[in-house]
Every structure is written in C-alpha cells, then in structure tokens.
Length: 283
Image 1 (cartoon, one colour):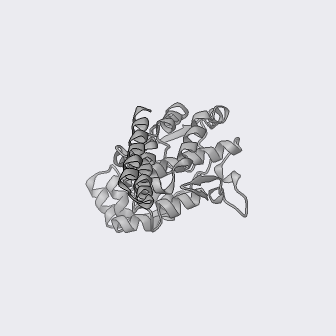
Image 2: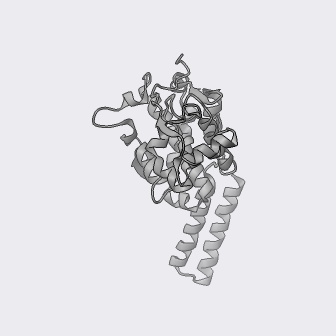
Image 3: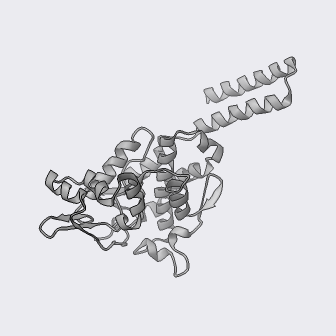
C-alpha cells in the first residue's frame, strides 16, 4: 500500500513537472502508460499462493498418482474462485512483460485450476468426458477468460502452450492434468518461476517410472507406454529425435535396457487410458 501511494505521488509530481516544462500531453501519456503497465505486471502474485493452498489442502498425494477432493472444493470453492479471478484479470500487456518461466508457470497453473473448476461445476461425474457430448468435448467448451479472450482448455493447451506461439517443452504433458486416473499426478505445489524446471523434471520422472502407466519387458522385447506418447508423439520427436530416446532419459533402468530402448529394439505399444475421474472418493 505504501509503495502504491509512493508511485501515485511520483506520477503526480511528474505531471506537474511536465506542465511547468511544457512537455506535450502525448509524451506524458506514453510515459504514464509505461509506468501503469509496470505496476500491473508487478501486481499479479507469481507465488500462486491461493492456488497452492487449494492444492495442499485438497490433493491427496499417493506416490506416482494423486487424487482430488472435488466434493470438498465444490462445497468450499472460495479460494479457487479467488485465484481464478486473479488469473482472469491478467491482461495481455501484463503477460507480455513476464519472462518465459513466469509465463509457462502461469499457463500450467491456469490450465489445471480451470480443469478443476470444470469438474466441480458438473460434479458428481464419473469421468471428465461425461461433461462433453457427441458434438462437443469438455476440452472445447469456452467457459473461462484468459488474457482478455473467452477460450477453452483446448485453446489454452494447443494454441498458447504447445502451438507455434507457445513453448517447445514436451514435459508439459506431465504437468497439465486431465482430472483422470490415467493422467499425470496433480502435484501438491503450484508451478512458479523458481521451481518450474525442478517440477517439470519431477513430474516427468515420476510418471514414466509408474508401472501402471509405462512398462518395459526385456524378456518380451516390449515397451508399453501411456497413450500420451502416441497422442503427442511429434512433441517428443522434435525434442529428442524419437519417442524412445525421450523415454529412455527418464526411465530408471540398467544401462543395457536403456540402450535397447534408445536403439528402438523393443516393440512399442500403447496402454489403454483410464478416463475415470481421479476423485479421492474413488476406490
């Protein structure tokens, strides 16, 4: 509050100075606009404190997986709604002033938080896919505003995070969650600029070494992977050359098995994806 008052006094002082020195109104407007943009950029809480409180209170960490207390959040949505209001208030001008780590952390948190909002708006459901219909998937619903646009989860993921204007970062597939048992775990911490790299690495490592989602059998000469590696194969190929090379980086295995995977010597198949809601009430 003190800093905001100091800024206001400084701006007022500048206006008086400009008046005395006969500086044109156009120049004054440009300078004040830049100052306002800087203030706005500083206003958003990049610690994502409210979102982290929602996560730490309502996400049940179960090792390689996690469950969410959707019913509890639906009954007491205050902090989630307050966080989403702050997220939706961020302007495109503010966003452009942030560094890439701040931007990506913001978009990942926004995606995950709006996914939970979508679920609680329709809870109880057995699967997020039940929210859609034959003609419209839940991911294509335009139900929130971000950077001044009314958009869908699909737009956020594929146009803003993955698209040509997005980030060449395949590890986001283990950070974005789809409210399903088959998807990567929702971590109990918010993504932030400072811990973005560590959390992306942790999420990828945990997911790939979860044998309910990915399995290696040298005896059967088979590499069984999550469908995520099928759906988004291009992202992994662009970054690592092949899906197998990306996978081998993160699998905790002996070097001989890793060489077999890297060389593409194992038959690659994809496991069925479990779309059941990752509800804490699910047995």
